[in-house]
Every structure is written in structure tokens, then in C-alpha cells.
View 1 (tube, one colour):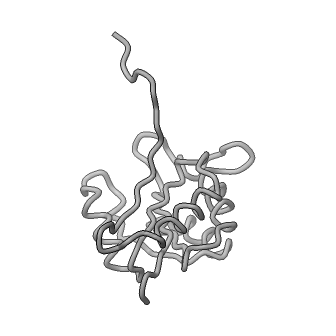
View 2 (spheres, one colour):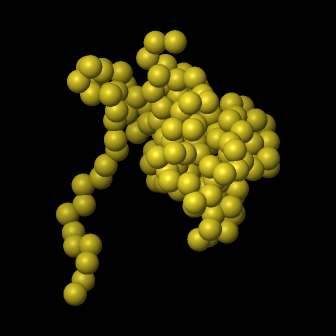
View 3 (spheres, one colour):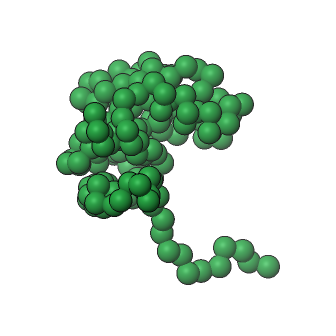
Length: 144
């Protein structure tokens, strides 16, 4: 399908630094459920897929109406470079363009996703083949 844009939500069952960070309590919900709620309101993705090795996460995604990608457990460890994780998932899902959407960015508003997709659809794909979000910070990152 030409110009198919897939939203991909990668969700590890367990993080090495913060245990169960994606599914532990965050406000009245979890980071994962918060992101699903945001993305249900978007208008421009052709499909949104949750990728995980964790059966419980995939079960929740299906219950909430999202497509799933069952990720090989080796691609949910710190021993595999992220470039290999990206390549593996991209080779297993159907989409010309993939929007990598982290649940650990809960303040990114629903309308920003729609604005980004609209912008991306309007650009010359021969000149630009990706879109990256950024935020201008005019402050110091280091002190002393």
C-alpha cells in the first residue's frame, strides 16, 4: 500500500532500570494505557500496532482495539542494539512509513500526532523520507 503510515508502539514487559515502568501506576492509569487512549483519538494513521514480547501487554492492546506484533524476546533486551530492533520490527510489519511512538512520552498530545502526520504527508518524499520531533530548549544542561 503506497504511503501507508503505521503507528508503532514498542512496549517491553520489563525495563532493566525501572521495573514494569510501562504498566505500573501512572496517575489514574499507566503509561501504556495513557498512550493507547491518546492514540485512539488520532485520525491519520493507517494502522496502530503494539509490539511486545509480553503476553499481558499484547492482550491489553487487543482488548483496546489495537493490532499487535509479537516480538521475539531477544529484541526486548539491552544486549541487542536498537538499530537491530528497529530493523527487525520494520521487516515484520506492513507499512511504508513507521511512526515509532514511545509510551514514555505521556505529555505529547494527540493533536501533535495528527499535525505530524499531516505535515509528513505534505513533504516531498524524494527529498525527505522521515520526520523527527524535537523541542527547543534554551537552557543549560550542565551546572559546574
